[in-house]
Length: 227
Image (cartoon, rainbow, N blue to C red; front, side, top):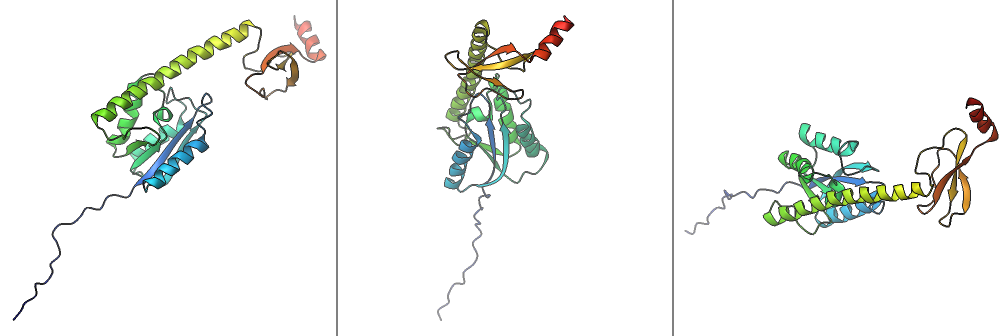
């Protein structure tokens, strides 16, 4: 009598990989308008779709410098959510190293990433040409890029300061509202007057310059009376 062996369930159970659920962090500073939030969103979304990652939350610091965590409310909230709660995601997608930060001390940049990794949440830099996998090569490249990001900010600050000093020496106004009895006049790149800038408004183009001109007669009379 032929006996057919009954199938028994295998004792080996394949471990199902956890679903890829991600939060995205985006930052745009006033010095880097080309890295707009829209462009970052498009690049990160394309990466997520390609790697079958579900985006479940967004953290956005719009118009914030990357040299310090002060004022970056979204990054602070992200770190707090990762460390004190049970985040509904297991990875964070960021465009590149510079969007995470241009900290002057590259160890500070690494410190915030480490806090996330320690809490079980990895970080993926979607536009970088290396995998953030903890390998020796990855860590070396990442460290170099962090140093470069911080150095770029230092050089930019020096260049901006020198440029502002040069404009001031030529008699141009650098930011701020005009005092009582004065008004701001916008000049084109050739020094021709264009229009008076109302209070609370900014100049139209980067190439425009601003000078101070006398304000309304009644304000001028008041100033003369005071002095």
